[in-house]
Image (cartoon, rainbow, N blue to C red; front, side, top):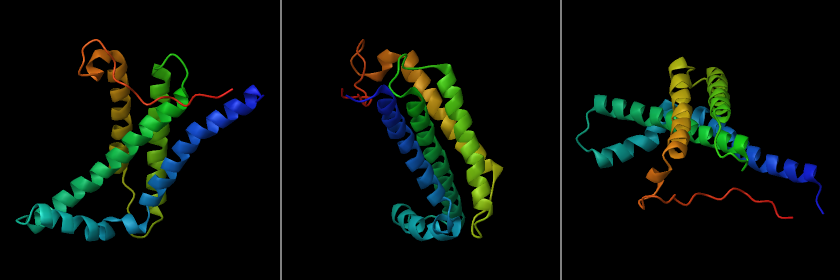
Length: 172
């Protein structure tokens, strides 16, 4: 029989390990290969294929929009993961404190990420990027709140809730 402490430790490692893996991915995306000077090699051919008449100024704008959307998206996902880790399958399924803690954690990581980028020669640190990151984290919490507040809107069948990903259940 497993001890409750060991089970809780394993559960904690599962949830927060996922968050740590995502943090490592964010850190990897903050390195030289993913700088604006390098990502144009991947983004521009796709833009040329999708929009062959795009002007050079249009390429610059589209490239910026794609990169800033990446900031928003990676921290949107981080916000979801941190909330999920804070909750760890416990009831109730939602608490304001978890949302606030998730956003605060993400904002702190956004600032650390920009500090990291200040040491990468081909990257620039930007508080505007941290703001976009933080906005992504806040948007994830709004989505969580919205789904909790309006459960009937989760499913096309009025009055029923949509299936959700199951939380990891412990086996005894």
